[in-house]
Image (cartoon, rainbow, N blue to C red):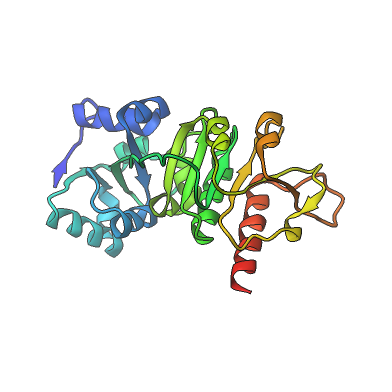
Length: 261
């Protein structure tokens, strides 16, 4: 294991740039996984990272030692940092002291939308996106299409909210959703507070592409016009609408209910 003690070390500078800059991560096609859970899921679902970074204090933790041993057996580059240098990289307050640098998977774009999927139009909140990814993975929906203005799916906050769901999904970013919808071979269900039908009123047992919009404006009128179904999630309380991540979870698991009833 290589120990780095200087902030001027070239590799440390590179890691700090990637850890702190979404633009740098996008350009490099890399993601930073911070914490034992994300690292464990990555090892289970995706393989070995490019670099494994640990803090000195984390070496005493059995779960960290186990991950470091696996990385060593697969000849992964391992970096040990003093706690203060590690803290300057990490965005997790009171974290464990372990992170991976990994390559962002390049999922091949299908010729057309012909199976279960989630389409996200201009979603802005990382927590919402991560929660939707987690719910989609739990509901068995394999593909995610993010519009050009949707938050970066591999940002640290999205990764933490997704809790490892990223590695169970095929995520496509910077997608022209209008072009995808024009040739869709499956029904497209969009949520809208002004819809005439409820999610409980249609048959969801077959493949469906779910379309969700921006936290404030919802699905754009142009995309909403291309949806096969415009649906509402009914609620009894005196609130205008659900949070988009909560709405997505309700939709996904109504579909699960219908499929397993």
